[in-house]
Structures are given as C-alpha cells and as structure tokens.
Image 1 (tube, each protein chain N blue to C red):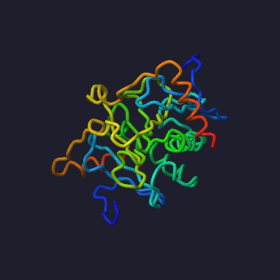
Image 2: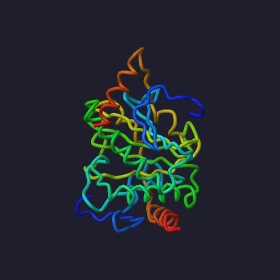
Image 3: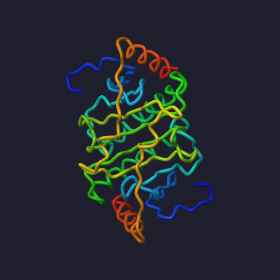
Image 4: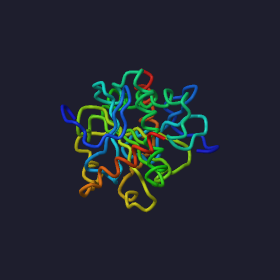
Length: 128
Length: 128
C-alpha cells in the first residue's frame, strides 16, 4: 500500500479511500482503508470509527444495490492473515450458493465447563 | 437469538450485548449484537455505529491481551451465510499457524478490462 497508487479507486473521502482488491474473493471485492496509518482495528482512533464504518456500510449496500449480490461479507484480519500492516476492511459481494459456505466457517465445540472459562477470560479483557 | 438468553455473556452496554458463540471458529469467539433489532450492517442506524464498533475494538483487543491470541478476525455476514437476521459481529481469536489461512480466502483473478468495469459499478453504488 505504501507509495503504491491503488489502481481501481472506488471512493475517496476526507478520512478513507476504497479500491478493488486485485485478487478478489468474488469480483467487486473492495478494501476500505483509513488515510491515516492505523495498524489494526483496536488501534483505530475514536474519530475514525464513524468514517471507516459508515464507508463499510455504503460499500456493503452497494454490493446488493449496484452489483446485484444477495448479501455481503465485511471483515478485518488483525495481525494474523493481515497481508499489510495497515487496517483494511474487506467488503465482499456474496451470492446464495456461491460455494463459500461449506469451508468458510469451520467450527469447534466447547467441552464441559470450558465455555464459562473462556467467557470469564474475555470478559475480564474487555472490561480492562 | 429471539427469546433465548445467551448463555455466556461477555459484555453488556446500553446499546450492545456480547456473548460466546457456542460453536466457535476458535475458542473465545464472541458475537456482538446491538440490542435494537437491526438486520444487516447497512441497516445499522448512525447512532449505533460507534457503540457497535467500539465494542468490536474492545473485543478484538481482548483476544490478544486476555486470551493471548496473536491477532483477531472481525467479520459480519450480511444476508448470505447470516445464520440469524439480526446483525452480529464475529470477533475470533487468531493464532499464527492456526490452520485457517489456506482455505480461508480463496481468490479469483480479473480478466483484462473487468476490474475497471467492476470498480465503476461499485463506485456508482457507493455514490448513491
């Protein structure tokens, strides 16, 4: 992202830029980035929360209204699987039976007592 | 979600509730929902953008600070792959080499001229 001009800009606002991901999950897949350098979601300063996520809302709406998708997938990878260390919000058009469902959300199960334990740990972390 | 009490509540605020997903992608996987009924991200009213996404920030931070994860995955499925028609933000702890990378983001390629076409369509949709 640094010094590179994104080839297919979709939207520019005072605080954000969006452009096509050149290797889309599905065609029309957009990345929204804050202009200011922010590494992960947790680092996003309060004044950029509305600019970034209202941009995500407009792009998610455009997936259905303009691209004719049935829905959208909006996601951020923080640190792990994050290709560049600058926050980018993926907005991907989804269609029913687009083949993504089966392997998209592999799931696990909690054993007895384990869920309560995990909830307590995350609860303490969130409350910090 | 309707009428069901989520079993493992993590955080309650005036506008949001979060709780453990009972079938986690990885253990500690949390869902954040606005208390008010909102179906998809595009439907989230402006006054709930900050409450929902600052909650997402706190939970993403807790994945690393409290759970010891290397990073996090924050995502919303809108309509397609959306298990219940009430906006929920997934916050999933991620670890390096957790096995998710390989099949997580299947990618496509644009053929000549196609990216410009898609960018124009989404641009028009976002500008509406």
